Image 1 (spheres, rainbow, N blue to C red):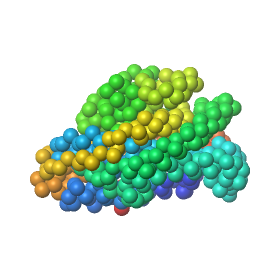
Image 2 (image 1 turned 90 degrees about the horizontal axis):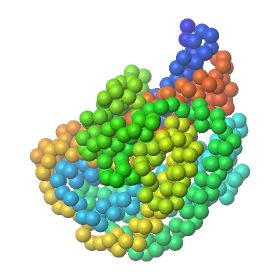
Image 3 (image 1 turned 30 degrees about the horizontal axis):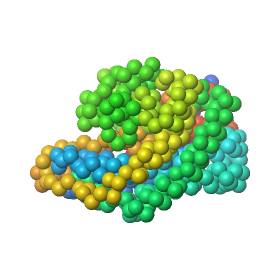
Amino acid sequence: MTQRIIIDPVTRIEGHAKITIYLDDRDQVTDARFHVTEFRGFERFCQGRPFWEMAGLSARICGICPVSHLLASAKAGDRILAVTIPPAAVKLRRLMNLAQIIQSHALSFFHLSAPDLLLGWESDPATRNVFGLIDSNPELARAGIRLRQLGQEIIESLGGRKIHPAWSVPGGVREALPVEARDRFLARLPEAHAVTRSALDFFKRFLDTHAEETRVFGNFPSLFMGLVTPEGDWENYDGKLRFVDSSGKIVAECDPVEYERYIGEMVEKDTFLKSPYFKPIGYPNGVYRVGPLARLNISNRMGVAEADRELNEFRQRGGRVANASFFFHYARLIEILASLEFLERLLPDPELQATELRADAGVNRLEGIGVSEAPRGTLFHHYHVDKDGLLTKVDLVIATGQNALAMNRTVTQIARHYVNGATIAEPILNRIEAGVRAFDPCLSCSTHAV
Ligand code: NI
């Protein structure tokens, strides 16, 4: 007879999900699964609508990561128009994506995960949250909130509204960056930089004294996937799609629009989360991870000085390819640092105030694929349209789904390590949840909620 222990809901993640732990008759963990039980079918809902509207609908795909959907959607639209968008529009979209990485990563680290790291796995669950953090370490908590605000304000200054920025459109963008806003953001970079530095120093000290988390919180070989520049460096908006294995060997590389050569999708019976896998290996062994950890593992370099120094240290600690999912947090902080350095380079560019921002065209292709890096990992929007531009088919491949197989392995590994007997103490359950939190899943968009 098997017993089940259910953690429902998983706390401090974006959206609703649960974890089931299976025990055999000797109370040993046989398996554990992370699943999503809600489905609202966004892809079906879009059929028959004009593809022009998709960018504006992106906030309905997900209220948590609308910016990422906005960018992938606009890029799919660019392909349908078959245009090269103005260089200024590319820079402005990149600016928005960097801001999104900063705000999303700051939320994940400071609000959702720092309570475990600072207050401890064993601390009182009633205060093991951002409010408890504000009480015990107000300086760090406030610094994290301000860092996140910087990202949010950049998004707002471009998109007009914080949550529904229908600003990036097929062919380009609607608005440039006002000079006044640029100067305000440039003035805030030094503080943001200092906050990120101190979070990195804190996290490295944590690693020095917590080897167990590195060893058992989802530490296994897998493939890693994401976008890299043509030179093979860190990228988040364009470039080529790369897969590496756990030794760092490049096992596949292609134009992102050819992703179906390598990515297959499977729906498992107890979840609404689609589980993509690496086709040449097959299901379920073709596990790959996406997101901050994957992007660092697949890149030769970050391409900016300070983040490159951090990447070197990251590799000294984790190996050329870090297999430890606990390093997602570490990678997230290095990506914030890199994004700030890229902002410092990009913000003074006068092209951000350009007036030529949008290429005009009609439907020139009946299929469009848009790919960009969401903070959580590679995001694909794949549209088919008729000659009037009405959507006949919409397929979205979401970061969280791509990490689904790896999240299952992670919760199983943690449960096997800590669970002994059918009564599980709360701090153990919290560690299992923390294994999922390292991936920073967004269940809101992975089930395509409307
Ligand atoms: Ni989302």
